[in-house]
Image (cartoon, rainbow, N blue to C red; front, side, top):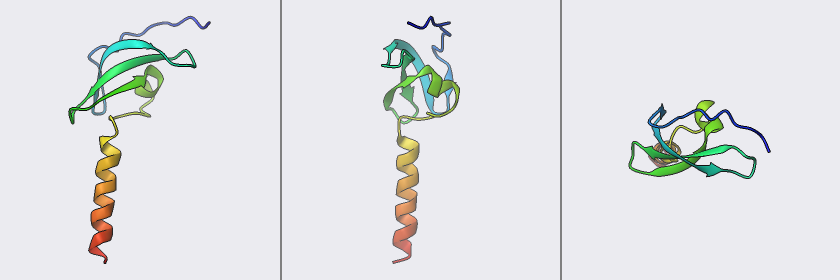
Length: 77
């Protein structure tokens, strides 16, 4: 089992997410953090994805982009 240098991410901001508490490890032994999103949602994210910027929201950014694309496409009809 890998030994972790646990970096406390509590209350740090990553895009729209704020890390609240460590909730365990995933199948690959990465630390998981419960995060609150600016939109009011929550998401459990690995510390790796928070630190490298791969996850920046609970999914609301992608939803907003999809809605904008749908509106742009409906204007063309």
